[in-house]
Length: 126
Length: 346
Image (tube, rainbow over all chains, first blue to last red; front, side, top):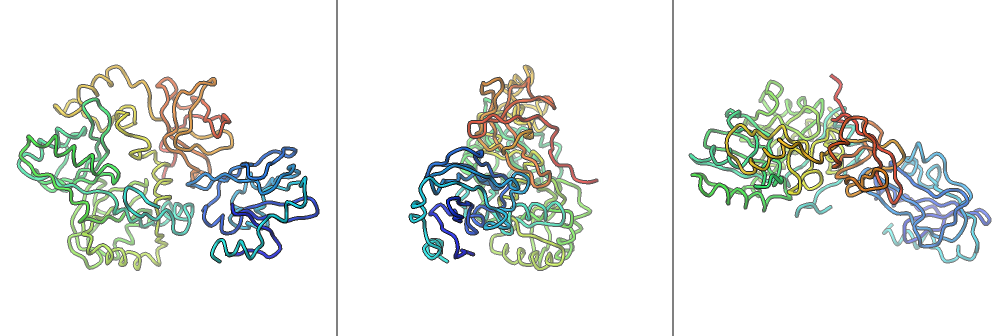
């Protein structure tokens, strides 16, 4: 399972890519593999706030519904518009075209609390 | 994934890929979890005719009959397929999750008939080979002319070098194909022969996930989701397997009353008109009030749309009727459509 070096991770199998005070968030290769064919992604609206550890959205495969848990506190500044018509991008390109949303952090130090690629790789047994 | 005491594969290549393989080529499902019961003896015909809702007298040797069996109040105990080997000899396929209830029901209600009920579920495995090229795959491993057999007939034949395989022209996908009943000890050999023969014909191994999306596109009922003891066959869209005129049977009086009055609620098929996927247990709402419940729902791989079935008041069952599905607190519009949702190209 691919675990890129330039990202941070969570126990809930999300990845976070910091770009200044804005973070892109998606789910990992391992997560999409476990879910199977993703057919629906429900995300908050731009301008909404997300709260760390609360659910901020839903991802559905053919068989299952899974909550998405916010890895950080912040304000949604962009959502990936491609996922409405092409949710399969989450399977095909989990770290690229399958990104879900971008969040402006209220406290950059929260990034320090996220998992390193090595720790995440250990978590998923890879 | 655990299912009715079995460890079942949910998917191999992915639900959508498996689903499409069955619609476009062929898929092989291990459905050995399904139960098998035999009823034999001079009283077998009369006994089964009394236990099931469909008319056993329409069945010839080598024929299969889809039916419900009901409680006295009309609630569905299970849906099953009865295979007739002879006037005194029947082989019955039942749902895995209903095995104990069904066997108890048979024993209780067949006690006064001169016949023997045997639960032989542990001796039989079952494979479903389904799809437009399924019979080509089958033809490569058997001399039996399955393509020449009518739907809902069966024959015992040599398949993949194994004698005595029960080959039925039945299925749960809406596609052409066969279901194979095998002795447990010979199941692996037949499975491997089919996989080898199917390698060049696009045969895909399929799990429970694709089995569910395929059957739901056909609006085939799944016991425990869409039908149960709380619903009768007229409500559940199985009125066509209730034959009130055949004579007495368990639940007949209750079902005659339902038919006379008309069922108050019915299982309907709908598709979503807004974004969201209906799932089992989601409320069906109209004007803010809950008027029913979704019993099965999914993203339909063939149609690329979210579809579902659920019980609603009989006044809302006409095609074009509208209501909302409450998805995580939000009401998403849905409309009743013609079923089956999917129609095979002629």
